[in-house]
Length: 101
Image (tube, rainbow, N blue to C red; front, side):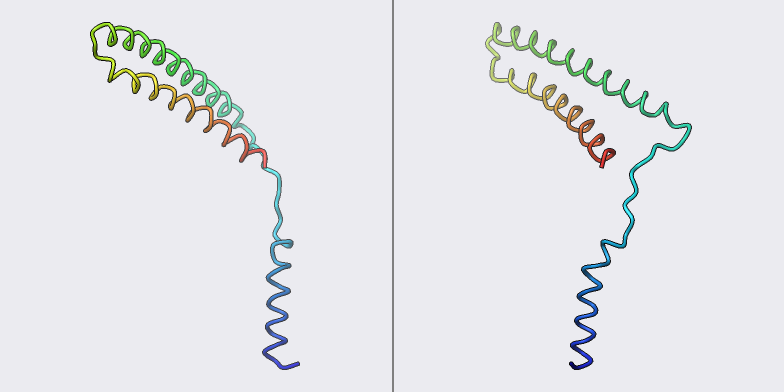
């Protein structure tokens, strides 16, 4: 076996074994930061209340728009708040998934 083959074989073995040598500790919340999770849960709740209110207001505006004959502008009034609800829910789920892994 030549020197180049030996170096290549050793580098290949090291490349496959290196990820196994890296520690992967479980996430732990630092002491004294319990209030942060409370604030995040409050912000999530406030976000859902605002989005819910925006959907109700959007529904009222849609009813008025159709009554006036301006129905072409109605769809975005509901879609944007629904998009906001999706972002809030997905963001919270994404963060909790990352924190759990």
